[in-house]
Image (tube, rainbow, N blue to C red; front, top):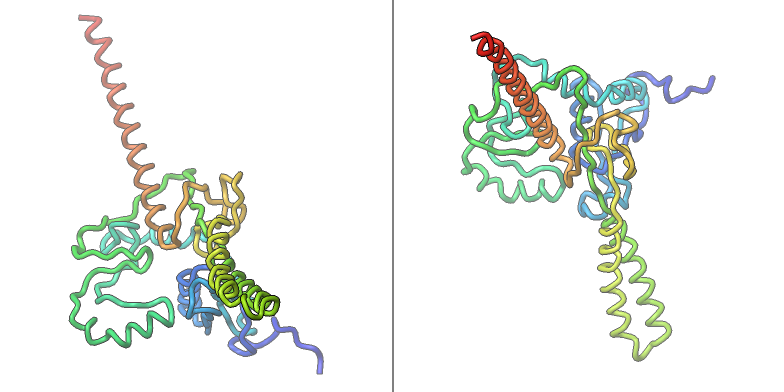
Length: 299
């Protein structure tokens, strides 16, 4: 029987393979939703969902699909990240839009706890209490919660042709990796102290065992790096970059959470639109003054 490459497997068949890794579980769930909408089976696997601090050290969040769907999945996920925003822009006016990020992923529902196995456990325990909470509008993009459905805009603020598409430096730290290495170093250090000082080294070994993880966590928090905030991109950004090398977005600032991307992009659009309106108003006033001068001079 001839060798069959994994790309030759029939659609929906084959073993599960990891097609992409994420630092942000929300981005992984968004891509899983996209694949599900296209009829593709996919699974999100968090290597250390029980402890978010260790998630990065354990390989982050993984999106897994069947071997037979790999080519189709890669084509779907390689779509330009900015196209999702443009689809929202082309939607007809109306419906409920988030007043913070201007997107239409809004649902009138009760508070939900989601995003990790710990949140799922809390949801089960608090389910009777959650039933008594009032329904509110929740944005599934930026996490904003509000009450008045008319508070949001009728349509998303548009960028003009040639305007830069904003992305942001998503600032991350190696705190989880530092904690993991600190735990390992503390355990090894405590064993060495105990072996070297079997009688008097108990307190010192305990101090090493407890202190090393804190030192590792602090050093990891100090060692920061930047990623592109565009969902589906997450390319590493060096300090000299003014544009993302992968998605070509213009770097417009720094954010600390992946959910802030949508709200920060909306702020950028609104500020740019307001600046354009102000410039046009000044140009209009200047033209009016220019027209009045010849008339007054002839009089």
